[in-house]
Amino acid sequence: MRLTVYGGRRLFGEVAVDGAKNAALPLLAATVLTDDEVILENVPDVGDVRTMIALLESVGKRVQALEPDVYRIRPERELTSTPPDSLVRKLRASFLLLGPLMVRRGVSHLPLPGGCPIGVRPVDLHLKGLKALGAQIESQGGFWCASAAQLHPAEIHLDYPSVGATEQIMMTAALIPGRTVISNPAQDPEVHDLARLLIKMGAGIMIEPGRLHIEGTTRLQGTTHTVIPDRINAGTFLIAGAIAGGDITVRRCQPLHLEALLSKLDELGITVQEHVESVRVVSDGPGSFCGGRIEARPYPGFPTDLQPQMMALLSVARGSSVIKETVWESRFAHAAELARMGAQIRLEGSTAFLEGVMRLSGTHVSVNDVRAGAALTLAGLVAEGVTVIVDRDEHIRRGHRDLAGELNRLGAAIIEETSEEKEVVSSEVR
Image (cartoon, rainbow, N blue to C red; front, side, top):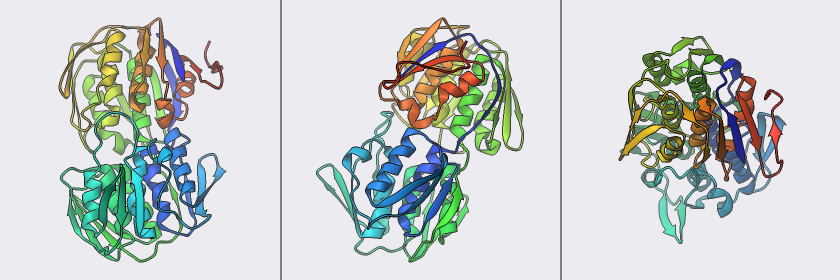
């Protein structure tokens, strides 16, 4: 996949946000916990979701699209305990199947998962949680084997509020009768969305500051559930409006989930107007806003998944900026690509120091993860000339249904090329 971005165009209009990829993935994994029919609505059509659907089908589920964003999940055959290595290694969230398959089948086998190369991505907290619930965990030739000899509820403290580990424990504990308590759980909106689904399925879940209570049961039932809006995609479009200049409104989003970003944009001097389910951003583009300090932290801190996009924005801010990454130790690969476009960035460990420039320059850059691809696309919007973004592994499509098309509808000029179609040009590009 390749994007050719013609810089210098302002953005105007409205864009609607799809369902959250990071919510849809654990929701899909949770359907393994029941033999009843589950219907999920507002499911985004992105690469990672398609991979998770393929994983569900590989272990015995039938996934039927009732509408483009509505799926019915029900059993097609008896569940199997070992999803294919080739699918698991494509997706980090595939590891969420370890506990649910174990609690349903008595045993499960999964290799270490794949995904974006943004850090070591340890699964130790997943394994710690499952062991506390009574699972026996063994490593066998690159695979993790979990067996449910004597499962029981437990009190589990997470040394770090890991989203994946919190979701893994929640799903597994939902089918273990009794009360499991997680202290220091992740508090992300996507975790709360999974809790709402599990409650509908029959589990008892209570969330309080610093603790999460799961009252497990012997059987979970089917239900219908709507995926929350994607706060990361919403934030990406808001940052696009801020960096390119113009006046855009992002609809079908939840401003409360975007509080860390919105307060930061306001702090930088960018006009932000919040409404019930939409946010408007008005900006004069590069040089019209000041630099600032960003520290990516677990929710409700600033999202690590918006850190690359903010680096693109601060590259063209007035004055100096500092970005500190505390979640993933390797999430600065996009800095070198932004520097190729003229950004003034100096890295020291987990901290990036930026001196804003008035304009970036178009050139050839490469994508190594989902959010870096979005950041380079946003940088291309304000670069002089043409920016060619090479995304050989189609990372951008893993998290964005149609990033180029949506930006084109707001006034950008982006040509998308894929291996199947030499050139796909939006009718909005002139």
